[in-house]
Amino acid sequence: MGFFGKTRKVSGLLAIGFVADGMCAARITRVPDARPVVELSAFFPHKQPPSPEALEKVGRELQAAQYQCATLLGTRDYQMLAVEAPNVQPDELKAAVRWRLKDMLDFHIDDATIDVLDIPADKNAAVRAHAMFAVAARNTVIEARQALFAAARVDLSVIDIPETAQRNISALLEPEGRGLAMLSFNTEGGLLTVTFGGELYLSRRIDVGIDLLGDTDPERRNQTFDKITLELQRSLDHFDRQFHYVTVSKLLLAPLPATALHDYLSSNLYMPVDALDLASVLDLSKAPELQSVEAQQRHFLVLGAALRLEETVL
Image (cartoon, rainbow, N blue to C red; front, side, top):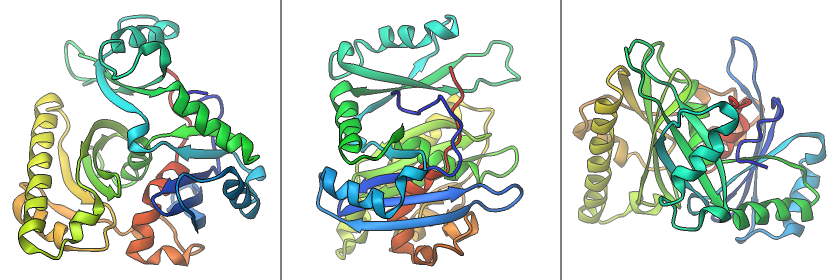
């Protein structure tokens, strides 16, 4: 299995993700000309790492056997690198990318599972420089995740990553003809993405956990916010230089229990900053528990994973 499970189109995917204090699950139905409907969202408290017995119990409760299932890797489970696209035939692409990555990973290339995501080139450029994202994880990480689901008798179809899960939500919110920056936080840190035309163009990790955003000491909190602001400015300036043909409309802050960061960024960034309420983009009528911002933050990435469609085969 590669990362993105490209062999079949996914409809009504059941996504199961692991957070610091348990397991989150979500299932979403896409509806033509309407907001996608969250058919199910659930949280199951459990210590990490999850046991096969606990996952099997969750699978039975969610009737997982009726659906294709997806899971998300954690931030430390893989590396994501932007590389120049090799000028090779499609069937030779992954081998060529593997060769390019051999000196870029912090483990041996023979121990890696690799997948790729295309970054579309400027259609109006005379010479189209072409880049792509390469995603690499240790074989042992992929095998352990597969073994966990197999032991729990849950049929795993898709292994996803946070960047593409966040992209799936961002793509629903893009203004026509413009890009969208999105920033989310969880216990593993911050994730900045920029999407355009439903594609992922930029991904940056920010080494700030969500617990630091609510620091009650104003000086420490402002130091944290300064760090985030500086990283955002650097990343967005880099994006503007590299993808000058994409105009980023605004920065959208994924659900956060505290509002102080939104207020700070609004005062210190050169672009508009909005706070996301998932009810504006997803139909939550069947998932009233997601009305709270705390629940939206906890389920954010697993909801994004549940939104995935079949990836373009490269």
